[in-house]
Length: 222
Image 1 (cartoon, rainbow, N blue to C red):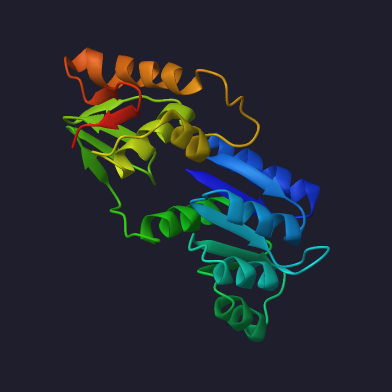
Image 2: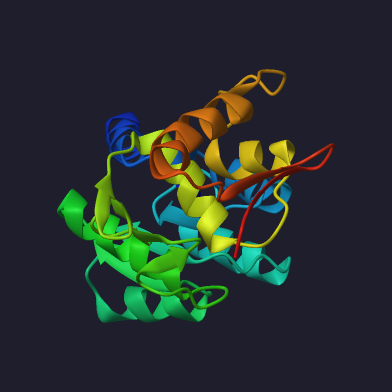
């Protein structure tokens, strides 16, 4: 899953980036509204965390511009304002959720998970495919009731495969959704992590749920 964090306070943006990367998300950060609109239109994000108080245009305008340009990813707004008119303004601009500062990071994590599950296409709370069960909230994976321990990035790769089970996912698409702009696009990261996953979810169980589609990418058998 790939997130865009739009926050001009370095301490807060660093906190959010660190917290969500620990959960296995790819996280890109922008400090200005104009740059956020550009990046939100250029890249395919699974959700946006958007601060209202930005140095150029405010978060309301960022949200409105993204919606006007056809970007449908879930948007959660962050603000220190608690007045009802601000909440209404944010929702009317196209936001999906709203959280006032100060907030608990675990609540933000839960809200982002819920937004990603809901849209733009509804997603089940527990993902199942190829004999696997993945719980995005609990961060657990089981095969036939046997727990499988994964790193945060291994979990992110498997989660993306399971959300798109049966589809062929190219290496470029993996990099777009599971890694952020800090990665080396010429590296073999995807192949390495697919191998790690096979060593944990397939080989110990004598199965082959992740299929290599030559010249195209990888597919999780449905």
